[in-house]
Length: 222
Ligand SMILES: N[C@@H](CCC(=O)N[C@@H](CS)C(=O)NCC(=O)O)C(=O)O
Picture (cartoon, protein in one colour):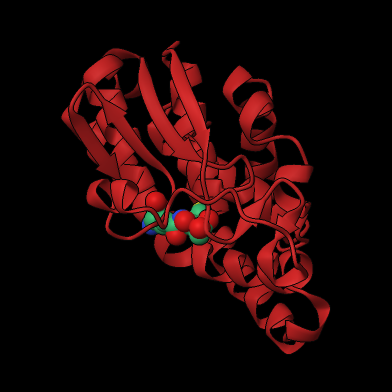
C-alpha cells in the first residue's frame, strides 16, 4: 500500500493518482495542503487541509508541498519524479514499454509541461478561481492564455503523425501532459482548430484514471 499526501484539486496530485490507477496500485490518500481545503482557497477564508506545515511532514518533504508519497520506507516528492518512480517500480511495460528511449521521451514531455504550461496555468487558476476577488490581477489572464496557446500549437504539430506524445502507445508522458492540457481547455486557453490535440484528449478522456482523478470540473474550477 502506497501512502500519498495531496489534494484532488492539485494538478500535480492528479498526475500521481492517475498513474496509480493505470497501474492498479492500492493507495491511501491523506488530504494535505497549506492553501486549499474542502471549501476552497485560504484567501477566501476557508480552512486548509493542513498537515504540510507539520514537522513530521517537513522531515519527509521540506518544501511543504503536495504531492508526496511513501512506499515502505522510501519517501518522494515532485510529482513527475513520483510518476516516473511508480512507472519504473510497478509498470515499466505498462507505462513505457520497458524501453529507455520511450521513458526518456516521456520525461521530455513531462518537463515541457512543467516548463511551458504550468506557470501560466497557475496564473489562470489563481486569478480566475481560487483567489479572493480583491486579490486578483485580471490583467495577467490574457497573457497567460496566449502563452499556453503558443505552446499548445507546438504540441498539436507534434501529434500530427502519432496518437500519443511518445508514439502509438499511451505512456506516463500522456498523464502529466494530458492533465495539464485538459485544464488549459477548461480555462479557455486551448485555441480552436488544434484537431490533433482534440483527438488525443478524446482518447485520454476514456481512461479510468483520467475519469476519476482529472475529469471532474470542480477539481479545476472549484
Ligand atoms: N513541481 C512540484 C510542485 C509542487 C506544488 O507546488 N504543489 C502545489 C499543488 S499542485 C502545492 O503544494 N500547493 C500548495 C499547497 O497545496 O499547500 C510538483 O510537481 O510536485
